[in-house]
Length: 135
Image (cartoon, rainbow, N blue to C red; front, side, top):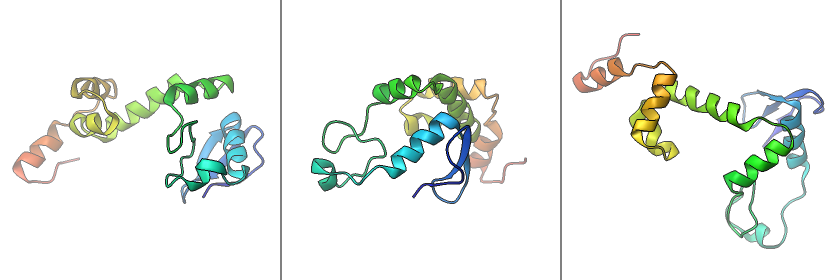
């Protein structure tokens, strides 16, 4: 369930679960419209999957390309957001975990880790020896 704190003008805080997320105005406005949208009808009402962004085909989500075009049409910068998300994930996860999770090659995940300036050698040594890593 998504809750919004203010009318979506310049920005709003939304709660997809319990953690508030500060969103830019255009995205907050789109999410508020999505929440107010009536329940699906036709094939979508009978689909076991409840996609946040349903596609045109039954049971399928909206493609990444179409979603990117729609966000760009509303002047929501997708490249910067994607880069920020990848750098954050690379800081939090080792490349061997990040790669299969996002469908990346391990080398690509390692490159994102270098971009995030994260060194996982202490973690790997702790896993090898069974000791707690030092912070």
